[in-house]
Length: 436
Image (cartoon, rainbow, N blue to C red; front, side, top):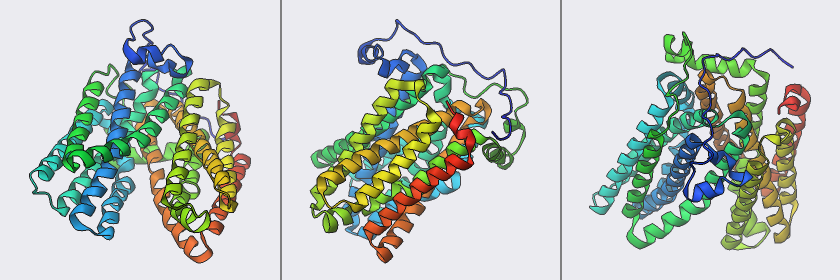
């Protein structure tokens, strides 16, 4: 079973108590359903609204920033570069972002980041509307926004277990997954409509207002700014030492280590297959860009449907078995997709891939947040966020292998590797079987 986990500090903050009768409005109606029961907790409602707003802003920014850069330069290369700059803050700053959240206060960090993000959006909107915007403005603000987003996520995720009781944590993370997947569909559509109607400047004004509202909701949270624990090494040691403390805990704790491994394997061997969807749509399935859009849409439906299912079933799920099963099913879905020459079968495989991806991703978050000691939770979430780097590395490898062996063989190999890794994790990390 691995080494025993150190006891948690008894002085760590207790979760907020549910407010059963004081929930009004549309969210109050939803809270009566078991799927949305975490909305009974005031602090989670506020945290969830901030999550929804921030996710919406991020997806809107991706569409608007790309359109603005291409409109200014007409260069596909610069269009790619303005997206690629997001990689470096995640690579270099994610562990430090988690340490800062534990050290200086998660609520303070989240509010400061969101207000700064709003300010950058308003500045860029002003530059666009006054016709003074230059490509370097898009690069600089894009890099700064990427830095801010790196610091927001560990702070927000670390507060989720403090906003609900333990029995509702899986439901809460399922609801967060619903917010993310809903915004992934709505954000680009809303941004595209605003850009078409009034231009990129209007979209950035809306994004700025979204972050202002998210900051207002965060400011109303009655959660401790940081865990109350005596003589914390986070405060008495250097940033580097405190960051290394988080890494050592991840390596030492078998449950945290297993969950992190699942997350990184999925990011490296599963998620990057989407970079080859244009090849499948045009050259293999012969369905063109409309078909590619349908493939992505059905994958999104699978993801959103499973997010609702996880929220509905909640803590009754056998998490350890489903973590491994989700990765295994992801690999099988990729295998089917790689071999399919029938568009309907490919759409069905995309539903399976989207569903299993959320199954593993949401449950990994539940495991990491539930089993992380409060003083270390920000740092563990910072390392979890770095899984996005593996997606970037996987994307580069996927493109290289597809050039050498073709798209179908590459996705086939990814499916086999993902299924094999899930079996290996299950056999070599027995602690994962007992995760509840």
